[in-house]
Image 1: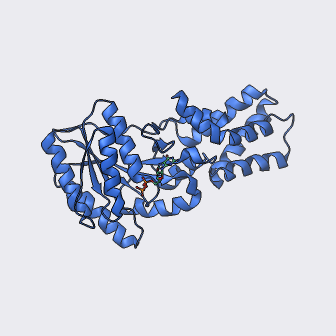
Image 2 (image 1 turned 90 degrees about the vertical axis):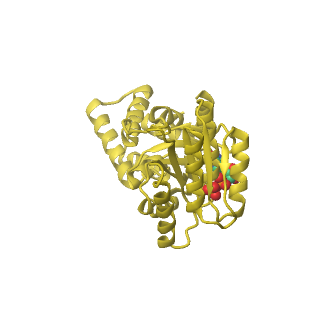
Length: 300
Ligand code: GDP
């Protein structure tokens, strides 16, 4: 946890330091408050939540008077955590139930880190003593299945793949069938994320899900979102949220952005909690999302 925190903090502490420096001034002018709001918006927090945070801080400062740096930091920490939603359910349903494996579908635009996240998640689960089968249902991108097989070998999970350009739903079906036959704990299905047409995407993801559900319930649909794409990523994410019922977000490449506020924006936009964060390309660079630790990392 310490290592992950350090990795986040390296790229993100600028946000916290800018805010804390401003908030620690002896008296705050209207311009200062505007600047605080701008910093939050620039960090992808979103206009409405930024305004809410500033209004709340402003009221507190007015009512309570001048505070020391530690108190200011505590106040800001509390506001950010409140916006992130400390009580949202962030656990992943990855345990076998009713004799069937838990099934996790991983969806999102190509290049966001779907395959990598699938591999890293398998690594976490295997590390927890679970048995995992991977399904390479991204049959559109030629290298995706190879990449997933490599991940599977690396982390100790079997990968089910189909013929190149084959039917994604049939690969998903086979993977779940295999998972049931082997009695594994979790089956994770990597899907294709080409945004050809919205209807095409919805049809394909819907079909993959329905076909899986002939054998087992889909317990999690994780939307992978690249944190570095900011508000643009959100627009694309919306299409996926319309296509399938998303249960959680995996926010990748958090190691490459100082804009941690995207966590708040994406949850607001999609109404589902961020459950995982990607912090690098390596097998151990995936962490459960924990609001307190995250805000501490941002504030430095
Ligand atoms: P997919 O097309 O969505 O399956 O994307 P990939 O899993 O192939 O990932 C695309 C690129 O992003 C690869 O080079 C990954 O190594 C990289 N990547 C994925 N997750 C992270 C992350 O959390 N941090 C960083 N820095 N790179 C990542």
